[in-house]
Image (tube, rainbow, N blue to C red; front, side):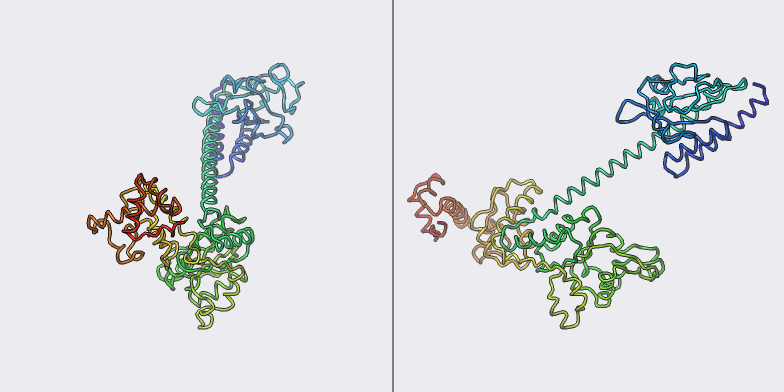
Length: 513
């Protein structure tokens, strides 16, 4: 090759490499970038029928991933086992191959059936695509053979291009693996949330709670607006979660908004978002909760505290499914399911003008009333034991049970704070307890009588012994259905001693029959 010809070749190669680099650096999908590279090789160097064949991650074969100058059907036929044909051998050995005349090479299988093997001027060049020591596939091109053709120069240049392609393919696969891991992790978290907030995980076996479960099951898979009503601490948010994760929107966002916790001057921006400069402090554009919940569910807690001026805009979202950001002019569509909750008497608020009647009817499509804890006393022990196991595990304590006097106090209390108050009560008792059982003196003073409110530290020795013996005897009588003889055997004592203690401490065995 003359000096002038060599210089022209170098200039041509540099120009081609520049376009190859630009193609690989573009933000288009990998297939589009590789196809563009094959196009550049054909246009700049006359290398036709270019293909990028990649090793399948699931089988020991090589398949044409991207081609230039082949029909889709011809490209689909380009599949080779390791060591099969020129392409398969290049991948298996990691070494390039040159076929000066495709019609005379037995290894050239013409699997794509795209070449005229009677022609003597078609050469086939194939080089491995590498990323480090790993062979990811093969890059191949057809070359019209002539006296000026330098296969050595062509192989050298294609090896450089293949190395660039190999890095792009490797990075793409790493990104795909990472994306797959993120999708898998998201699906796992989604499954965990669905399991955590499944309606069957809500604690309660009373008749009132079974009615709640039935209503949740009826409404969950619809798009109906739900209004959850009940006293504070009854578990309205848990029910909202159960409805969302039991619905067809379960894989979309669940956004919670506490309408009473956000200042009145910010609640509109919080719900609908705002544009930059729409008010003092709006230094950037911000999406609202309805926008973040697109396709999913928005939970509006304490809806009874919503400002009357904003109730009109919420009514529009419910009726027209549209809204505007604060300071914006673009009308946005809202594909969002609304679940609202309140502990207020909305009917009384309507009479006083504090709550719009038309909004009430829009929200009250499917009302669910959660009973207070005092209306479901049979669930108190179930809930208490659930919280006991939860906080004992969290605090590393081996607390196995709640004594009968403590249970009696839990059941007798009126629970104005409902389940939330019971949970806090059991958590406090677990922190105070140093033994294997929760006793009455571990419970908060609000649950105790004047005599019971004194803790174990404040009791005299005789009083502490009396409390301890009373708990043991009552637990034994409860287990033996009030039978003193069996209780004595259980306590490894005698009926005479247990009978004496029963009379002394004023215990009534008949109560436990």
